Length: 490
Ligand SMILES: Cc1ncc(COP(=O)(O)O)c(C=O)c1O
Image (cartoon, rainbow, N blue to C red; front, top):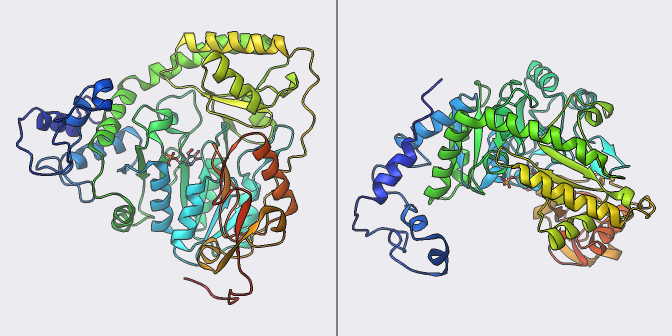
C-alpha cells in the first residue's frame, strides 16, 4: 500500500495559495481579493484555494505531476489500476465510461432502472440499450437489482453485446450478483461497468457488500461525494485490467470535462481519500454498530418497517447495503412523500428521498448518535399521531417500463412536436421524464408512451414530487409524419 498520509495536490495547492502571487490569470477573484456575501459567511480562504491552472499544479486532462500522483493514490485506495478525478460528478464518469466502451449501434446490457446520466450516455454514444427488467417490488413501489438470470437471458438473445452495466448498489441498497455477472460477461468478452454512485463506502469495510473492483469489474463510476466525504460534484472513475483502452478512456474523459476543473473539488477528493484510507474502516464499522443499536428501537415503533439483508435475500439478491436506512411508513396511512415533508418541516430532519410507501436515509461514517436519536424521536411522534389510520390504500402505481421503439439517440435527433400529456398515448417519446431524486427515468427517448406511464406521472405530480420534463403538462414526441423512418443519426 502507498503512503496515504501524503496529499500531493492539496499540499501544493496550499503552498500556492500562501505564496503571495501576483495574479495575471483567471479566476477573476484573484485568489480571493474580495468581500462578498459568500466570504462574509465562509471567509475568503475558499477563494484563495480556488486556482485555475498555475505552474506546478498539473493539468487534469494530461496529468504528469501532482494530479497524477494524487490519482495514483486514489487508485490505490480504491483497489483500482487507475483512477480519474471527475469534477462533473458520477454523471460525468458514467458518460465517459460508456462512451469509451460502446460505439454507435453497439449493444450494452443494463437494467432499466438506471440513472438519467446513463440515458445521456446512450444519446451521446449512440449505443443500443438492451434493457433488463429489474426486480420490481409492487408492495413497496421500488425497483431493485438486475438478476443474474435476467442478465443471462439478455446475453443469450444478444450475443453481440459489447458491455454490461451493473448498479452497485441501487438507491435502496440492494446489490445484484456482481461477481457472477462479471465472470459470465468476461467469458463472453463484454466490458463490465459499475454504477457505484452509492457504493464508495464498500471499499473500506468488510461489513459491507463487495465493491466493483473487488468483483473484477473493468470500470466503476463512483460518487466519492455521496457516501465517502468529498465535496458535492466530485467523483472518480476507476479502471482495472486491460479490457478498456486507457488512452481512449482519458481522451473520452477530456471530451466531457471542463478545461477549468475546480481545484477545491479535486483537493476535496484527495482529502477524502486520505481520511477514508486512514479512518474509513473504523468510522464505518462504528456507525454500523450504532445503527444496529438504534435499529432495535426503530423496529419497536408501531407500524414502521425497515428493509435489511433479509429483504434483499427474499427478493433473490445476494446482499444489502446497511448504510441505507429504508423505512416503510405507509402502514401509518401516510405516503413516504408526506413523511418526508413532516420530518423536514416539523423536525428539521432531511431525508435523502421519499417514495410512495417509504423514505430513505443515508448513513455515513459522519452520521452521529444524535442523528439516530432525533430521527427515532420524530418517527415515534409521527407514529403516535397516525396510529389509528388504516394502512395506505394500495396505490395503482404501475412501475411499468414502456417498450423501446428506437435508439435514444435517434429519438433525440428526430423531428419532434410537443403534445399535451393526455394526448400522448402511443406516441414515441423524444425526451426523458423522471422524478428527482432518485433521477431514474420513467420514460426515455425512443420509448412508447403508455396510459400507465401517463397515470403514474399524474400521480407523482399530485404528490408534489419534483418532475424533470421539458414542459409541465406537455411532452415532446417524435413527429412521425416528418420523421423519415430508418433515419439513423449514427
Ligand atoms: C444510481 C445513480 N447513478 C448515478 C448518479 C449520478 O451521480 P452524481 O450525482 O455524482 O452525478 C446518481 C445520483 O443520484 C445515482 O443515484
